[in-house]
Image (tube, rainbow over all chains, first blue to last red; front, side, top):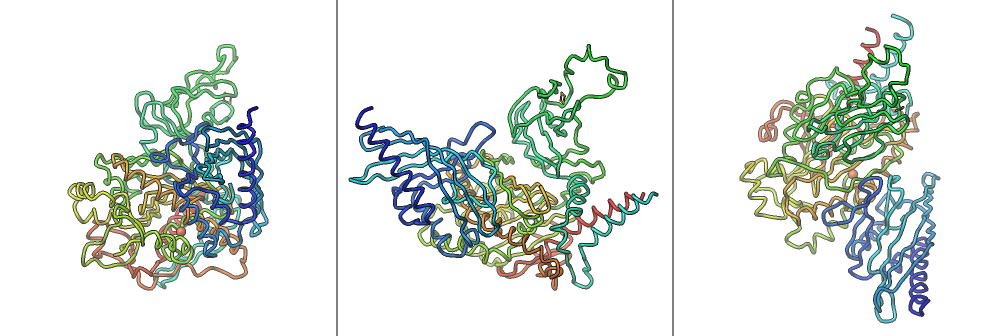
Length: 168
Length: 458
Ligand code: FES
Ligand SMILES: [Fe+2]
């Protein structure tokens, strides 16, 4: 394995685990700061039993933001304490594993991983899980790596009640 | 008449009376148990959903020969398909042999549907084309003489690309069932130059732990918007402060009265409308002035004006069409008294520009479904309502009387403009949020249960 490969794997794993921790702790300002201004955050929809949507301009996604601002709006909605979806906020535990990263350019890493998120809602005392695959693209900005693109393929897409950035 | 039939009739009649409707006294009330009771739930599935017209899909979903989609009417699985020679058919999605679901897929294109259990095969017109090893089957005449085709629905009809089906033959013709609600479907469909609508690929399925009638009511409820969706309204206001000119915002013609109201129709349907000078969100039809002009010339300025107003249609019992910042078609499937499955599609006029289409898609994702910034709040509210309905000792709720003190009948300025004859209408200021538009759905619910009670004793 080349030095560059090992580095990509380490950089990606650190970013993914940090992201999971920030989401679960509700440190959303720090979480969203991991994203570039023009970052794409995309959860495609399933067209049928086998295929997901491929073009957000002509197909409907479950979630699609092409700038960090969209995520910031979602955060502000929750922090306003006006959205009943977050009163109380469900508790989540993200598990990210099967990380496979590679350098695709000197300052760019592409990474595949899988996730499961356990969501527990203290309002109903009920829990459920969400699971699927992540595809991250990370870009280096000076000393920092930022998320340029995150695609979340949600395996169980018959969604219970609410789907938001913190629960996938 | 036997005792069982009598007691069934009495039970159904008692259920129908859970809707207490006394228009002369300006009184309307529903008992909480219609949201929670298992026997009410079973009765309404059988005698409401499975005894009247339900929306089952768009013609454009099965545009080509052998296209199919699967759905439900009440509890019953339905296979909607276009035959090789282009005819639309809807069938109970169950094998004639031993009942297995014949087509387990959401959608696709197949000339034949082969049951996986013992291999019986059906073509896309529902005809049985093969019974596996029939020759060695030692079948009696009672089998050989029987029809083995998929069982079609009792009634199938469509209006401007919207397909409806009924499992009961005892329904009015589809045109009569829809009545003047057709005018409001026209306002959606005629936004397309070719008069066609389609679902944008990427449907969404979600559930909430509440009764289906919570969604039925909410789709006609403007009263909740400012409170339930206040966090979304904050976001919209912030965006509007910096919005580009192509955000699609349109203004009402001068002299139009601001306000909101509703129209009620026979067979349970109702429509909400809102006209506001300053709109919170833009519209795909409004973003391209040239195209809007073309539409205006084709449909006239009055209908174009109504196309730009928010309209929420409820076609009882299972369909809502919402035309605002985008257009949504949503249907619900009751799973249990306290569980509902929603299927939601982004609806679009065929032929709009690529930019308008993308705006429609972004706006739809923004607002609707479990992942949208508005509908997700509704879903959680339904669950809070459902939990609250357990407080049966508190008696009936008071949520059916806003507007009941001043119900409109006969003609109004709006009914004349639209050319509709609703059974009732309402109109008030933008803060009005009337609730009398829930009444037609409950009246139809009651009528269908009363009819079932009468038929049980016949
Ligand atoms: S159940 Fe379909 S072939 Fe037997
Ligand atoms: Fe709502």
